[in-house]
Image (cartoon, rainbow, N blue to C red):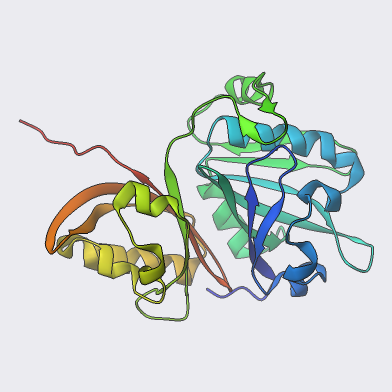
Length: 272
């Protein structure tokens, strides 16, 4: 389901300042800026001033608690000076934050689907008020406590807490086999992937044969529906000609510019 509303992918570092490290081309359709104009800038410099304190709390909670799938609605500054209401699906990924961003329309089907599938949904108003619009699995009291996390950054860059190893990919939504256009370096450490050689290859090349059909069907559904979807499969690792597998879990969301996917290792479950 390719949305008629502008959308784009963004990647931030996990610092307190949330510097932009990547934007897909369609950011210009959504908020007027080109990727080159924004990369390296502080994300907070483009948010509505009244909303920054609340967004800083949501950002800290996402980082400190390594949220796999949260969503936040807020206002960001268009290049011509006015503010655009957007909603951002946030996937925390070790040392970066991978986001799919959508111009907000409460009547849009994609918005309604995302709102029901994100683990939690935050709404920040122009007066600075932050509201929990919905959550799965956590009580509102637990979410409130999460926002009041006492963890801090060290010199605005490093985290005190050790983060779970995760890696991310951007997949081409216009190829049948979902070819890889970007992969973060943590993939080499977690699943032994040669990141340079993986570019241009299908994600399915690294999926255990018995899981290929299921993963293909899930990727097709994400592309056609706009769903936020969890995947679980065995990753195929090539060890000098001999193959082993490693269970992984992933969370994926989609824009017209591509699919954003974050992976982490999963336990291998055996039942006697």
